[in-house]
Length: 113
Image (cartoon, rainbow, N blue to C red; front, side, top):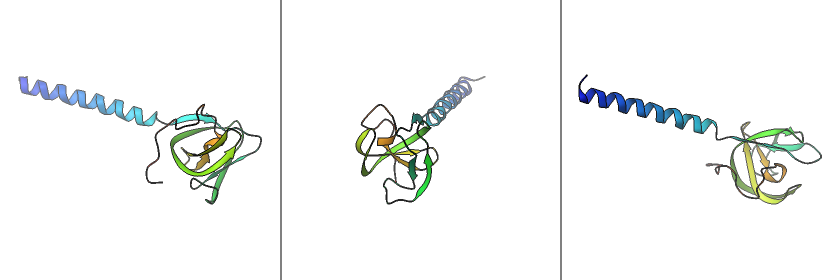
């Protein structure tokens, strides 16, 4: 095999490995956290109480957060915040009902919300 073909083969292998790692990282980017409180928590179509309720989560349910975004300021069991968590289900829950262990962002910010 010529030197040029060997280099091309090595580069193709490196590129394939990079894309595999990159793809794995994006799949693993959703983090799971428990819903807290004493009653069901509304999950909405957008980051505020004026948005339609799509579903509810029972306390203790783990949700996967794919991104977070600022929205309506809410006071809940974990304090007051304007951060809303977008779940892997595509709905939004006030971060004041999700035990992330932080008062700030714990995953990337959503784009185009």
